[in-house]
Amino acid sequence: MRSEPRRRLDANGAYMLDFTEVDSTQDEARTRRMSGEVRLLGVRADYQTRGRGQRGATWYAPRGEALLVTYLVPAETDRPDSSAMLSLVAGLAIARAIERITDLQPALRWPNDVLIEGRKAAGVLIERFIARDEGAEPMDIAAVGIGLNVNTTEWPDELAQTATSIRSGTGRIWSVMEVEAAVRAALMETLRFLREASPAQFTERWRRYDQTIGTRYITSVENQPVIGIATGVADSGSLMLRLENGDDVEATSARHLS
Image (cartoon, rainbow, N blue to C red; front, top):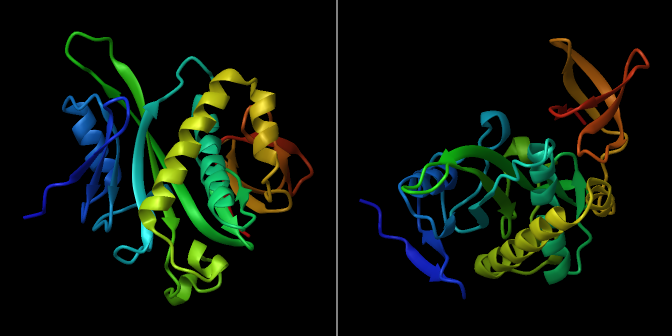
């Protein structure tokens, strides 16, 4: 039987829940919010038994060495580009948090991979759901799942050349809770900026960290897989690609190949 979570209150009475172990922070946060925990900010765990990343991939995270967290935020449904922008928001917030607490210079690879010295340190999974609270209008919620390598220094063979961590970049051990506080503050700040700024202003801030240009991606055009080279990120948050046949397209879903 798993232990009860520790509750951390903020100044407004909302709270984070800290678990030693869960199946998935995404599932735990969604279940609790749909069960009526309207003040829940998010769920963090030392370890996940069934954590997942983009397209169902497993996120490698030894117990206690990574920030494994899901934050619950409004899904910004009044914007037609809300899903793409939320993806960019999460990556930008992680990069800014790392930059603020370390001497590192993180970079971003569309849509939300966070890189340190060219290697992946963090990834994001965004899933949306509808919360139907008694006496209130249905609310569109985004579960922003973050996996950030904090203190991991040893990797399985398949990740040894592509993964890194804050510890590897700085040469010192970090408090996961300190990193979580920095990421949460940066996420809330970046969400406020998204609401106040134009799409062009927001994307311009994201581009300050961008290392996407020149990366090969696979996407779909008219239900057919195509490969292209990234030429930039549009103001809408979509990826701009030049295909092998010379055509230029914008993609809202694509997977990087190199």
